Length: 432
Length: 179
Ligand code: HEM
Ligand code: FES
Image (tube, rainbow over all chains, first blue to last red; front, side, top):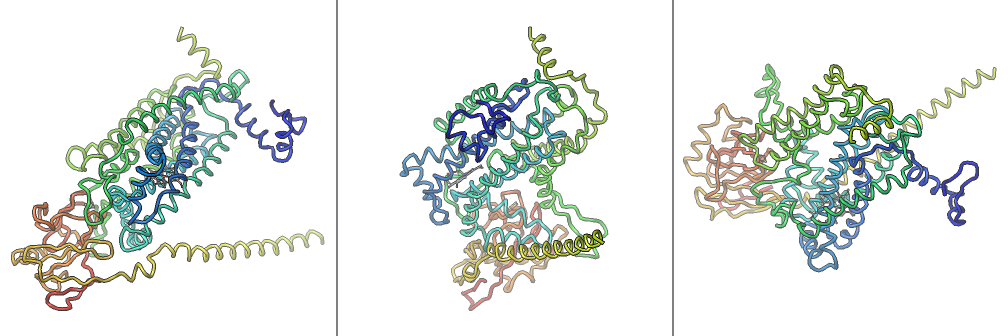
């Protein structure tokens, strides 16, 4: 079946051959998803790219059908979502798949990102591949944020209010930018309308960036848990059937958990205030974003002290102030922006944390910091919680800006295996 | 000779490329203006800009919340003590955004402010009886803990500014037009 290079195409089926001679799409598929030589030592962390891709398709399919019954108007949005739940055939299922799909999409992507950090997948020659990944992450967050606004619930409306108000921290143009984002003097119908338009658009932009992401992957080749690049044929196996089947297995397990939540605990990850219509005159007791935003929300709120630049009193009354709000906004966006620079912050020639004992521990600490931030993000920002958030924020930035650069100079790494094959054989020996 | 001619066409071509590139950039920039501006408030949105409120039934000490441009506006009928407190605090050191009370009211007994926390836009509590009013007896924003005083000025917490005073006018002793 494999396409041979001598003939134009080696496909048996005349229809496929006819098409392939004119548009070599089957040759391309076979090269990239059939024969594609893949390191033979993947562990289950390598499933999550494929899982994320399936989730993206699932979100688009359920989303398009939801959109057929959804009304993007402040006076009707909430009711139209309730109608989807009660009256539209299988509407409840579409909504629960979409709503929980967002959660599971983020679970897959967070594991996928952790894999990249742990095994040094961002290093040369995969820097651009990594950067495209961070871009996808940003686009996903924007998409999910706007999607969450669509039911126009208390949490939708107040989430939008708080997050769009962040932009008012920008000096000089802040207020004009916020009015522009809203399309009016406050969060209202123009806001909902544009969020729906963008929520429909952005997933397709993500599809485009995912295409580039996978293209870049297939140029550099996949990484692997040893961090040593494949050298001979002994180090790789063809993608099909080895990884098509491994990905299918991982996907099945993942889907099992996802479906269990969709059908047996569909509201487990939701907040009660998301099921009350938006009231612009009443703020809910606590505005809590979805869990996947919590660590960044906690970073935002960790900054509470204005800094006054000394000796600037002559410029404005009270001196020039670097407001806590602006500090928080910069830190929150900075927490993601710093990921773009990771390939250049980490100069260690060793990729995998397997052979970097100190870096491995830093990685675990980073996970702890993220979990603490996530927990703090869901609590009122005061007292001990505030200090925990500050400590974890400090670790987060120290991890990327101090520890990683220092480790790449001073860490004593373990000896690398000569090849993937050798690493695999050694693992086998040790297991026996 | 031939090479000289090549050079000539090179520079001519460079010039043309640059000009076309620059024109293209200007064109795209110009095309962006209507797209971006279409997202600014539309004419009818801006037109819904004023409301008239009958304030005759707001008792001393009470606050009425009305909606203006989608935002709550607090109309506070201040007690003499509240007025005195607001004026006494004109030079308090913890005013983040210093402003005398006299600059924030037209009639001392009526404080009219936009009830949107200048931090991240929550609605501060304290307009209804029984709600927390914060350490300065005005309003308290529960979202991240900002305290406002009886003049709606920012006194403690993360918010950077005082509650803004909307444009308003007393049409009579009992009717005020906001906007
Ligand atoms: C990257 C992919 C996507 C993500 C992460 C995402 C995320 C979300 C989230 C978090 C919600 C709120 C669900 C709720 O709380 O009820 C939502 C709602 C919605 N989404 Fe998406 N979405 C994606 C793709 C799409 C696409 C492609 C469409 C179709 C055009 C779409 C249409 C809708 C509609 C109509 C709603 C409102 C109905 C509802 O609340 O269930 N989504 N989305
Ligand atoms: S929105 Fe009021 S304190 Fe943050």
